[in-house]
Length: 181
Image 1 (tube, rainbow, N blue to C red):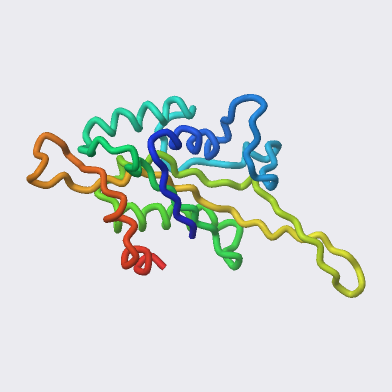
Image 2 (spheres, one colour; image 1 turned 90 degrees about the vertical axis):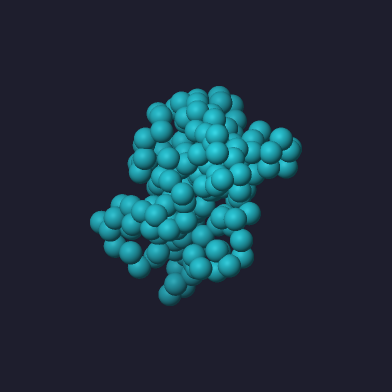
């Protein structure tokens, strides 16, 4: 599992990356991405078909969220969760559905704060192994889920005009991360 926090000006670029909708001429920054296989990727939720639609959803949700006017605020958190190597191919989608349900039900105040739940199957990294004196090319990649959400918690009595308040620290404290693992 990998966790990354994004400021407001970084969110759209990562939505584009996750949806494989980078502007013409831009690279993914990851040489393992095979654009010919991107049609195998799928989403567990529908917040829009394009990065612009997902970003519009994000902006609409943020109207319900209290936040301080500071430049260092975390506006999105992304988890990347790999499918275990011993999970049978026909169980991958069920695994990702279970992970999505577990994480959103356990840690998030609402599933509405989730922007992206995209499963990537188009990244392949190969290594060369020597077995019985022969070079063998081995794929060490695993399908993985990108789960990006707005780190919103209940607004409480302090901000009754909002449903939620932005608080990435509360959702990513050390004890929370330990509990996830």
